[in-house]
Length: 325
Ligand code: ACO
Image (cartoon, rainbow, N blue to C red; front, side):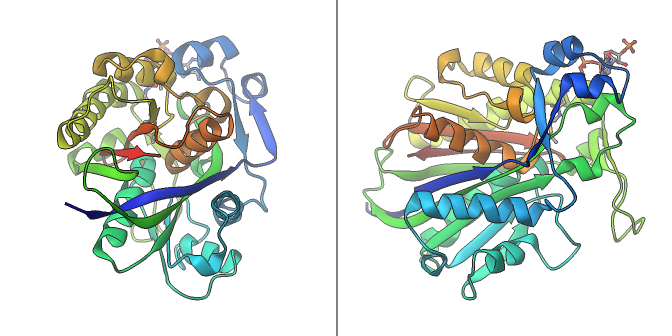
């Protein structure tokens, strides 16, 4: 049966000017390049300067995605920005991106699911497009996690980086099979009982401050692989596909060990796994679109390829989406 699919028309990304290497971090906290690489796979990350706010990064990524799609702001009628580090409590970063790209019509809003934000945003945009209410969505993941890190806490400050990525989704008619191009299925989960494992200890409604990130790293690691595997299996089941059919596995880039353990558990061959955490660190909601853009621009992701995205983040939230490019 024919149905509307949300087809990827373009992808883009942007990284802050300043790079911070593990060697740079050795001068800030008691750590070492070897420890960071061994435990996480991270070698360097980009850190935003004061003038590079989340919306500034998001606008650049959005412009790059529009250019890649061969579209203009006038062609878009929905902007969703996944972020946990908005420029302001309000207005939303999405409306700032909307203005930044010169768009004065349509709707724009932020979505907050921490590191799973981009997967949640893709799923949400897909439902808007499938309903027929909107035709083309700009889905942005943009973060400046450097602003909410405790730079004296070596257990967290070495893990994160800043950046932004975006995709343009367009409503197109498909045949209703897994051979269609576009978002084929999405699976979102959350369980707030895990709050204390990964959270920020401030906010406008509680402390009236921004707060800093707190994480029980080992605990997060323990749950991550199983949760990720569950939602990826759900996506396979819903579409009658398998790990064999996948061309690319593009997970949230938190930690190389979590990524490889997840791929291993799911039976996904290592050469199908896109890894950018070595260069970007964990950029939360920006990490998947940054990785998608990297793999598209270097020629790995081609039209027609089956691509699985997945993430787990604070909340916990977790989810997957299967996309035929
Ligand atoms: N440099 C050097 N030593 C360190 C550092 C550091 N930066 N950080 C911690 N250590 C020490 C610890 O103090 C500890 O020392 P001790 O044995 O003397 O007590 C030792 O290293 C081991 O610490 P652990 O926390 O047990 O190290 P672990 O092997 O678990 O690695 C890590 C820590 C990398 C955080 C890991 O647990 C992990 O990756 N967890 C998942 C975190 C994650 O991916 N979170 C993001 C997912 S959700 C999201 O993206 C928001």
